[in-house]
Amino acid sequence: MAMNTTPKELFYIDLKKKRETQGIEISEISEQTKINPKYFIEFEKGNFEVLPQVYTRLFLRSYAIEIGADPVKILENYEIHTTGKIQPKNEFKFSPILENTEDTKQEISNEISFFDDDNLFKDINLKKIIGIAVALFLLIFIVSKLRDLTKETTADDGVNNTSTEQIETSQIFSNSKEIIQHKANLLGSYLDGFSFLDRKTISLGISPPYTLNVVSTIHSTIKIKTIEDGITTLDKELDLNPAKPLERESKGKLHFELNNIDGITVTLNGNDKIISQFLKPENISNNDLAIRVILEEDGSLTAEYFQAN
Image (cartoon, rainbow, N blue to C red; front, side, top):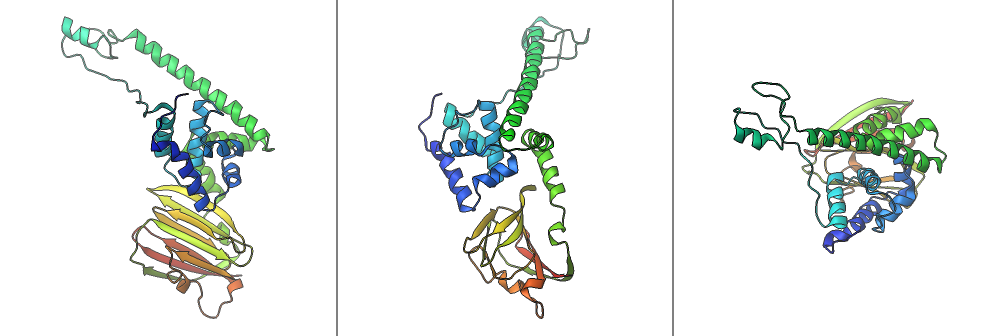
């Protein structure tokens, strides 16, 4: 496979840096996508020949989504890296028949036309119909092979058949993955056992991108959700380990929830004063207090407080 010697060769190094900067482990991506982690390890080395190209593109797209990168841009960089250019997308051209003349018939002989003044479907190009049929056959074949490969990789990790079906859906149809994740993270489920106390709102006068940094002195958890261009790029409960900062970025909306704030320091865009003023209402202990923070794209921040029942 020919390689193009351009700065785009380093795009996979940039992906690794973005993942490490956000504190995302390859094992987390593998758990979320149900894809064998060995493929992501090879991708970060620039080794894209471990899989057929169609699977590489699908797995690389899943990887990009999990680290908050633009999957379209990443796949373009992959094409430049492996072929030296962005491959043109096939388009079908349709032209109406204006007159029943020899010039018009000659012009349309290489296109698909569905209507004629004298006879419907008269000038349909047989070669293009066959081409479309072959393309549909190849699509069915690729989906079938993807199903077999996905089952094989998940079998190594002991994933059951029900989980495998969900994995296939998440890799082929990204919208289905969003639905599955939404069902697994119902609004408020993280704060079950808490009662609403109060709400505060303030305009911070800042705009995306937002960088959230959380440090905890004890083992705890945090639920983070990021929404960029109307698409949920992250919606997950993450572990907070002592002395190991957790960092996440968002180019749009940023939500996070803590079911206790004991020993936790929150920093937004390098400023530990912006959010800390919201983390401690009076007369409530840290162990009994939970908080939900919603930061909009216009810089408005809403903090909601909850007390353990």
